[in-house]
Amino acid sequence: MAPNELNKSLTFSLIDHLENTSFYKKRIGFFLREKKECWQFFSFYFSRRGSNTYQLTANLFFAFPDVDRLTSNFLGKEYDKTLCTGAEPLYTNVPNGSFLKYVYSADESF
Image (tube, rainbow, N blue to C red; front, side, top):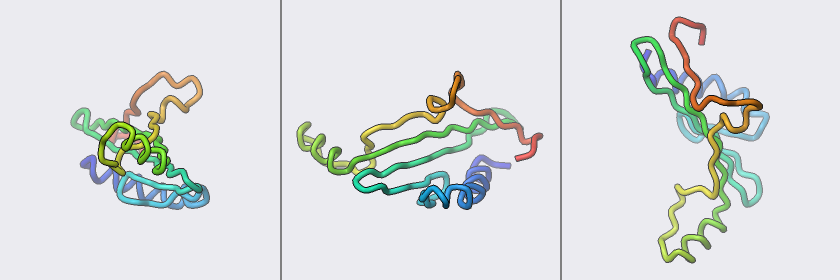
């Protein structure tokens, strides 16, 4: 299985699970939730690490577009809506998390 197939499969598996949290699918591997002035993002992607082994990387992001516009203006730069106020790798939010990536073997059940 190719990493893009795993990305699609996990995305469509998560749609129902994230629906009750107000996150919606923006694109494959990318979910968005808007809470007042804050945009919250959950993203992930698989990459190949061997013939049958993959690595899953997941991140949580948040953005306050008004703050980001002011920051860009202050720095004398053009506002770029793809830049976020803050971003955290998902593992930093896992209690006792000491790993950076999740490893998946295609020999195991997805």
